[in-house]
Image 1: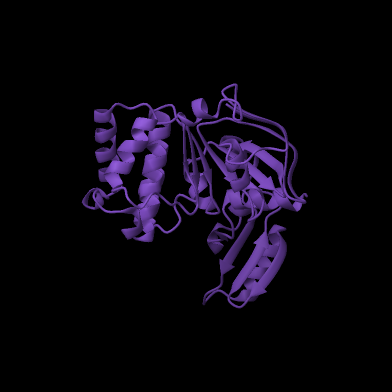
Image 2: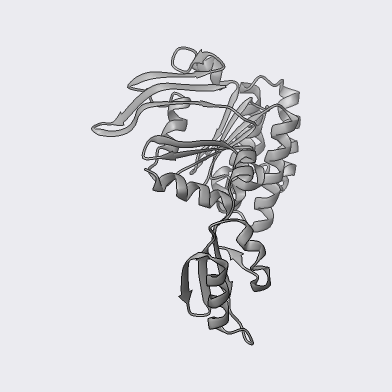
Length: 296
């Protein structure tokens, strides 16, 4: 478990966190927030790349300031804009990181080959990081974070720069390896639809404060998607659609060209509108996020 207790931190006079406290635990945790909310700063503090002004951060009971080297051996990270030494070939650097995480030379070599093959980078094994495309750089950075199966892995926007097929493959593999190897993965992402697929817990950070810390099962049980849109096509008329929506008792009916947007009051209302084929305006997690920051 990662314990963050009464942490205060500022960039000069710009306060980022005040008395921030949270226990981060779960198998795959989504850490979400707007730009500037403090997500990346929090990860840097956890890795002791910057020092807190006051408070404590502990990983499995070990303080990140006093026992940093012991902790880092069991942690992997992929930053949003990854960069690696220019003199290493991909396979060599993966082996190097694997050894740092306690693998033998043979284990590191085997793990390097496996990950390069898993992410379709085997033909680039002797290439330098700088020679890769944006999508390949993304995949390699994830491989570096995962090699050696560290207990805690932080991935900052892991599916950025990836096409739909690659995104799906990466998410499936993250889910598989986390549960198979007793790994705890913390994903920072603005692509909330991706997080819904793999996360079992979600933490919402807003203006340096924890606004929510939910299990996905609780969200699914207690929330329902409220905002929908209907596309009106002949022979159905706009007036008929709006009349039906009003009779059903929905709220905030807004016409935008051929589209009608509306909000449900109760989930049962959706059952009365199935013939209109309504489409959610936001995913469930997007709705939870917007509700959380509106309450600030």
